[in-house]
Image (cartoon, rainbow over all chains, first blue to last red):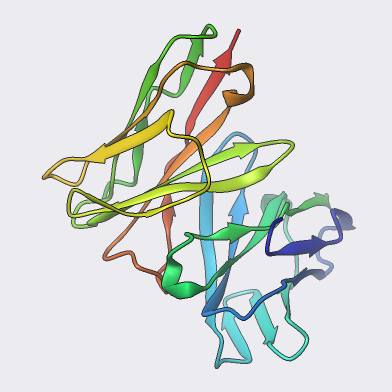
Length: 112
Length: 114
């Protein structure tokens, strides 16, 4: 079964609002990454957070990691219509021997 | 710097045929990984190549194979195609692979099996 599970599966908010997506996983990890995928396109890397880090920021993105709860969250502040996409968390363990293990994603819709 | 390039973008095949997909990584990247994306199973890891050697492999049947050339370009081959092989096949590259690095994805090859 997949390592990461995102919650919610779909989220619709108004432009300018903040969007929060959560990811839970099952086993100990080396790191966790968040990716964005626009319809019909490839994945774009957003943030990588290592197991010994608790929080990382990149522009309007904030990622937290709680290894005791085996969960992560992605916060997008001041959302824009261009943020409409699917967002995936991906976990890596065993030094990447199994590649990235993705959740099924959160589909985010930003209403103008 | 050019991104990851996958060709072709779309492909239609029939059951029993075989197919070869191509991936050109970002210049200087030596690791290439392949993923299959379907609505039912989501994104699943196929394999990773580094310096022309398969370094890691996911849980897929032997019909799925790949190779990497000396210029880091990679090809993926699927033989005896089945309806369930219909998917978006994504290639990703990174500098060294082996974990702990961002993956740079191409836009994929959408394979449809009739």
